[in-house]
Length: 284
Image (cartoon, rainbow, N blue to C red; front, side):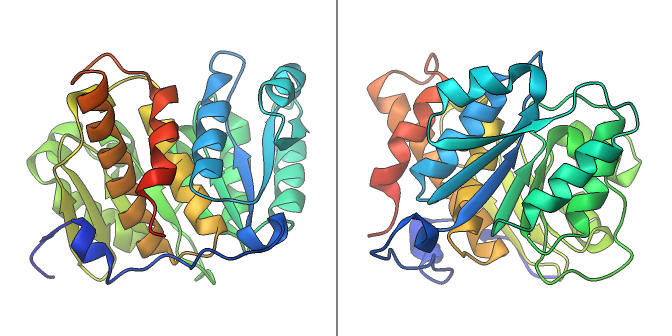
């Protein structure tokens, strides 16, 4: 176990992103976003837009069939994959997800999804896939510790309640020891974990930890976490190593908020505005 390091732009030079390449969309990575529900369809848009803003090249969005057309019109850059809306045991949804995850380099799953049986089946299918993974929100409540090692390390993006669910403990325990709980989750799920909060912590199963305290109060707003998940997914699709993708995503998300804080004010900007700040922050 090592002492937490402060996450800064200088430190990120030790965790580089893949270089920018000149080529078609296939050369910039293929991403599958599994997100949204009838109640929160916009989560898919926030996640997907952020992924494209950090350089992902080819986008698929898997979303309940009842809102698929609307999402496809709102996000013309994406191929839309329709998930069955009335599949009570999630078998068909999981089959579709399994097939589509084989067609991409990375998957980000969970933002805005309804917590139901589909999530458990989808989580199982994703963990069994070979794609790089960023898992968030409802998916985390249905995640089981892996039985076997994966070729790539999953990234988990829990807030306090979701981390408590992953560890089967109370939220007060997370509040008392966020780093320790993050490390337990990283070990249990063989993953890299972001413990979200006013101060965020990136922790690994090996005990390494990075802490980020920047950003702006306005980042604490509906949809902000969906944007963060999209940043992680987009960087994974480009070929970034999981730890590097998460460290950069936390910094990019925070610095985008800081930039909006100066332009708009410390609060009052919208989650949908965060993605527009990202391209200028990426390394050249």
